[in-house]
Amino acid sequence: MSAFFVFSLADTGALLFLSVYIVITLSDLECDYLNATTCCGKLNKWVVPELVANITLTLLLLITGHWILLILNFPMTVWLLYKQHKMPKGSLGLYDATEIHNRGTLKGHIRDSIIRLSFHLIFFFIYLYCMIISLLTRS
Image (tube, rainbow, N blue to C red):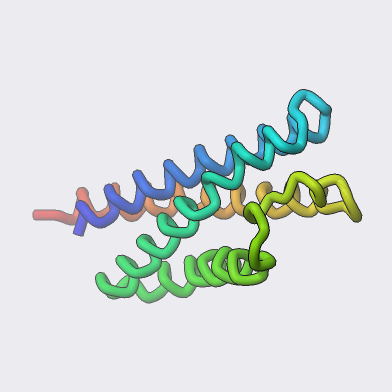
């Protein structure tokens, strides 16, 4: 069981670092340190790996029977799937360089990224706690 929590901790740690990277990149775009095309190109290549990492973790929680953690983790996975599904067909990705400065889209992306960052930070410590408890109760 502790191997599952070690994997969960590593997966959530990677998602946490990815969320920090996304927030920093979007902040650079907001401050005009990056142009929109470069920023969106950097961010769009990480949309699918983030989704895969979340789905993998959710499926492993389902398989191992950690129901409370599954219920807590499920909304983020559904939200990421919804964002992926809502993306218009034929677009370059979730982050569109032509639309990112229109109608508060950039502020919305920053808000969503900070929500994901907070979620992964909280779950990083939850999985760390679960891993420590799992190692201590192992006899």
